Image 1: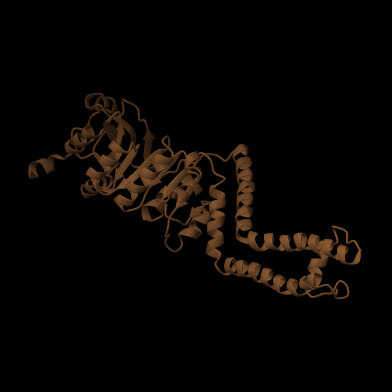
Image 2 (image 1 turned 90 degrees about the vertical axis):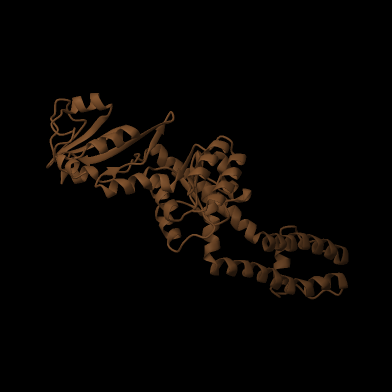
Length: 373
């Protein structure tokens, strides 16, 4: 049981500090400001037209009325007169001058037009709630700094988003056609979603690419990932870029020519895991440090193998590897003592160069297996 708990996948979670809570509050205020600005852009036509009519029209009406009758309407009263005329409430007797009568007959239909224009925009936003969610997602994204942008919220992208959110990083997601349920899950993770084509400059600007710490291209289309990587590198030469690719040769070309920090090929990532599963071991993906490949393997010590009967220290020194975890029955030790004896049936987690890991796996064969071969 203890070993099983040790093998469960863990998440790196940073504690939420007071400063982080304060930053989140400021971000919400900034997002509200951007969202209000977006609402203003939606309703600015009817609002500006309404203000123009009651203020500009009221000023003109007051001046014309003064010239005709010598009676002066105060400036703060004139907009109210226009409102009265819009709702067909007579502020006084109908004037006899034609230039004043025009206001009496023109303001009611103009008021209906302005009201209808505003109502049409409101109904469009009310019934198309996805549009409002998209606007809110863009508003939240505009408030982010030093965040991670994930392009593509498919099967792989969504898992990447979950991991980043679990590590307490700020994430902005771009996807032009998210699957059903993705929006709800992202809302639970407090991750804003921008529903748009990530290959467009305007979309990347909405995601605040210029202020992002990293950009991840996670779609299943190599050519789409290449196109968006080129655009992202052009907009922000300093951003860290990680891309997903199916073709290994294509991945190497992207990494070499596009100044991409990492291009992860699905075949390269899955091959060690598939091969390990076939022989009953767990092997991690390859890590490259200064062009040297490293990996980690969990294996059961086979009877009669070179591991059986050797101490931890001798195995580490002779094979240039690090035994990071040792398990026997219910007993589990991280960084076991060098004097500990390894016997058949023990479980070891070993970290070393990848070629050394392959040699260890090859040498962990029982005598019975050797005779069969």
